[in-house]
Image 1 (cartoon, chains in turn yellow, cyan, orange, brown):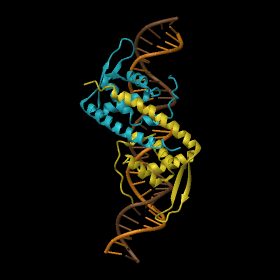
Image 2 (tube, each protein chain N blue to C red):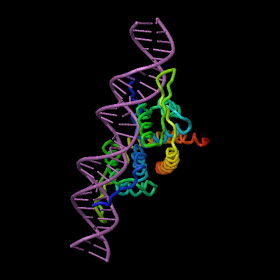
Image 3 (cartoon, each protein chain N blue to C red):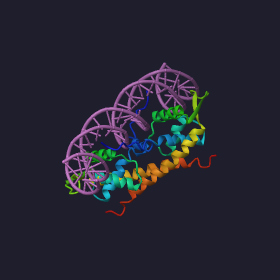
Image 4 (spheres, rainbow over the protein chains, first blue to last red):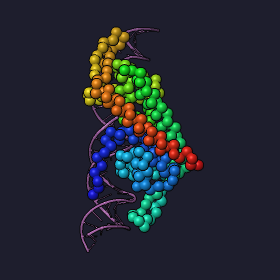
Length: 118
Length: 118
DNA sequence: TGCGGTACTATGTAAAACATAGTAGTATCT
DNA sequence: AGATACTACTATGTTTTACATAGTACCGCA
């Protein structure tokens, strides 16, 4: 049985489309396994990210070819499925990064424009 | 018949959860009708936003109570359904703005962290 | 008379994050 | 030995929401 995860109802929509980028960026730093990625994302401030979302994203990125994978047995728990970047994954990451920055700037411009309005 | 809108396949996920904010911010500047909001968003840089998305968002925000609405007949075309902010809409906008900024900063931190990595 | 632009509505689809539940291994405490 | 907690992963179904598509209708212009 798992602990019910009833947090993050509002932010969840914001994550759509960006979680891929976030997960890839974490793996790009250093090869990592799912549980590890979850903890790192939470450390960064994505406190509410659900485990299922990260595992699902990793599987999706792997099946698209952006991540490679290898299993490492662990002596302090179950085995770990590590993920690492592929060449096209790295290319895609760069592309996604600049797409994010463009998008972010557009949204910032829209919401900042009514500062002068009462 | 309408022009097929086959653009914006990749960005569409990024908009999730932010379109509400963007639409509200535009209406907060000045009362506006759907078609008008679409054009303004595109001017800001959201070139690919679909009309159906904006109209749907306006209806949703209206039925939640964040927007009020009134119809104005136009002599140069069909009638226009104007939308304006409500009190709780304004509160919600402020809340969403700060939530966006927090979220944006977290994502920026995650993707900027692997700049030093080859 | 038809076309293009304006303005809106309605229905159905797809993607993705999540809730939930389950399997297992190890460690610790009693 | 049994219970509990933490680690680590998988699978299924739900919800939200942007979009595709199609349709209605008004106006101006050639």
